[in-house]
Amino acid sequence: MNYMRSRVFLVLCCCLLAIETVFAGWTDAPAPINSNPGQVNDHYNSGGRRIVRVGNTIIVLVPESTSQDHTYRSTDGGATWTEIDTDGTYSSTLLLGKNQTVYHFYVSGDNIYMVKFLYNATPPSPVVIYTDPNLSDRGAGAYNMINATVDKNGILYVSTHYPHATGEKDSIHVIRSEDEGATWNAAGRAYVMKRGDANYLWTYVHMDLTSDNVLVAVYHAAFSSTQPLEFAKSTDKGETWSITRLSSNGIFNPAILPVGSKTIYVFAQSTAGKGLVFNRSTDGGNTWAGWSVIDGSSLSGYADPSPALGSDGTIYVAYRSGARTDLVSTPGGSALRERVAASSDGGASWRFVDNWFYNGAGNPTERTGTRSQIRYQTWYNNGGPLDWIWMQYVSSGAHRPIFFDTNSDVTIAGSGGDSDLVQAPSGFKVVY
Image 1 (cartoon, one colour):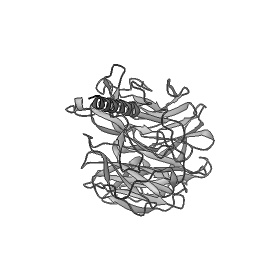
Image 2: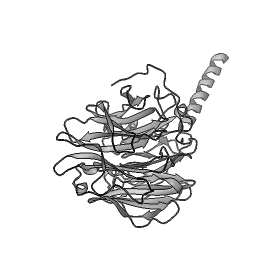
Image 3: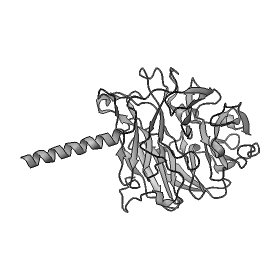
Image 4: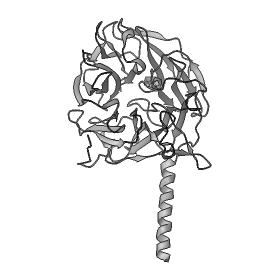
């Protein structure tokens, strides 16, 4: 009997330790960055990366009103926030480049704008960096988004979607700056990653770089009877691209995570499983393992993943999941929960570091709404804790501010070699 009691006690201790580990490091009741913005469109928190950090200073993009992104800064690790810039349209993107320089890119009318400033300086007025008469004809509605990345040499890349010619559907375009934003492609001369055609309007591009400085990207087609998703790779600084189709229909809103020079993860959402799925290549995107489900609980089909790599090789993915079990019958955004999934074996297994959160009284707290963002870039914006932002439904969605949380138990990786990743064993289950 004493032996059995000891075993029960040991199991209980292990369970408590596991629970503590799962929820360690997060704030149980985080505070909003902005307050009372009204019913901001859920999709306006999309776009490329939207959070950067230098030391204890954090800068984020926050949707405000019906069409704007405002810039907020915290100099105390996220405890308090100050609005520092009101320039920017929705679904814009934020980038940290060389010399601790912050870049904010957004589209308005026929122009792509840039706001460039040192992380601790006052942002200047925006400048036009690219013009095309077809930019204002973009056809993706609330999914109009822009993405950017920077390579190890400080070369800047910005991608967005718009018709390549009058009367066409949207193509994916890329512009480049090799002098830290001083000059860009000539007007109307962006590089074409993927040309639109009569069947497909290409959108939702997410772009990054491998450790050997190869540009990689994913995107999908919107508003068609099928929604193919494709992977693109460029070895000539974005001028030409090789294309691989990863899905013909039903998997969309992708995000990409390169690990080292050869391993590439693509995370997306699935209409079939209505949840979070991923695919993986270990040869630089030449071949792919197939789609596997991480979490099939999403009630809306909008997982909207945002991935990052830990310094120990652990993969983290922030995404929108299904409802808490006590709210499973509640439809819409108020019931959905933001979560973070993690894998330390290359995707063979996943654990959920925040199934949902609890306050000091032991009651679950809400983390709701639309796409969340983890702070991560292959180059420059790495190291330090795992920073996370998401749109919170307040008063059943009457207000939708951006909330911030950070986990100092996790350290974000830099751009290391393939050895950074603990590889998955061969034969892990593929379900698509």
